Length: 625
Image (cartoon, rainbow, N blue to C red; front, side, top):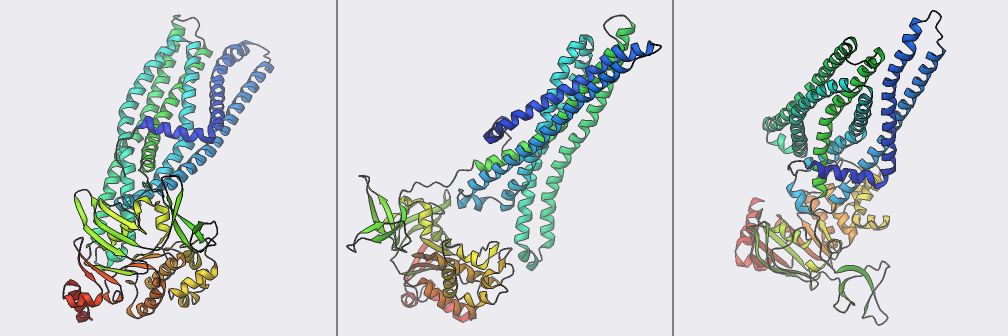
């Protein structure tokens, strides 16, 4: 995740834009409630002076005091405090609604944007770090919106109203308070500035820790197989120590800030009391009475306490802004570019039986809708003719992976790619899907450059079965239907039969309605792969990509699955990547790759006769068996 410094103005502006979208009226109500609450609180302090000077002192000198006036004033103060309490309750309750609503919208936008990101982003960012944005960073934002922001606004209102009240009460004592406040601000700037920097680091380190934990959880079998527990622990300790160090420094400054400010406030209280007494007794200011001093002492507390509270919330705000920066960094990641104009549509034949006509009905007949210069459209039947023409590709600039790849697969043909790990087999299939764009050359699909085809339409025409299966929380039926959300139950079961998965599915506790969780943890690896194959079958695409699709299946099961695979591949253009050469023998053409180049091509018999790399691999496989 981007670790650039936090641009606070930019982040705050974007957060306010979320508040303004749908919650502006509620936020105005919050401001008004905070203002009323602050005025009520300060008015209570001002009432205290009136209470002492106009009621308590005169009543104390009376032989037969009448307490009715005192009672009336006390009731007025009680009503005033009640209004303030109700307003405080109201704005805190409303801020919960605002914060949860903003949090939901941010998560919606975050997840929605994540769906538009290219595969390259997820290949280059730790999944745990991305997950930390959704959990830790969004949660710190929630705390800031629901707690810190109302507290800061309330404190700011209190400071403003109290300062005006102090000026109206006594200028000399106000000057004494201001001197103490300057000291508090200097201390706050020194300590909060340092803690804020470390709070930003803490959020970054927390993302690193989550990324490491996620990797270790996914790789637990590998860790245990290679007895790597101690090394894994050492790696965790290193990342955890870095988080601990930044959190320790951040909280060290944050935790000492509040006690220091409270004690400065106490010193201020004493100084104001002494200054007020000196001014009154010395006759310097005749306007100072006992009630004035009592009022000012309350006001000075009301003035210093909000500053302490703002200082206390400063660290939460800084941490939340650091989290918000990470959220917006993810939102600002460039979406996958798609300049294609060709779409995939359902078609049927006109009455003449020759002309393709677009239709909204499901006809199981598809065509590419190609815009023409005159504004009309040409319909090219989806056949599955894929051709590479002198293609070069590099994941990183200057590090070419594929060199001058030229090949073709006619509709219905089966092409196989074999070669050592890292030879470029999977990269070729990634280019067909346009997970990455080529550096040089052309790839044509039914005579159309795939760069001209919209990516969703291109991928809709392709079926893919990966070596690593991904099953989602849901029933077996729902996981198979993932390949075609419009598939009926009968079509789902037919796809499972085609993939030879129907037999074991029906033996599950609830059959097709058995719930799968944890990526199908209650199934064997082979069974998960069979469901993945059925998922591709129900999509019924004209082009299939099988990337080590049977690698997780034992030899006996492979023979059964292979028959289903053959039925699945019938009439389709198929690209097969396999290390088991027995699965590619019946391919129309076999491409042998080495370091990103096609070094041999031909069918099985041709390559055996060439006595080249394929021959050595094939005979070596039999020798191993």
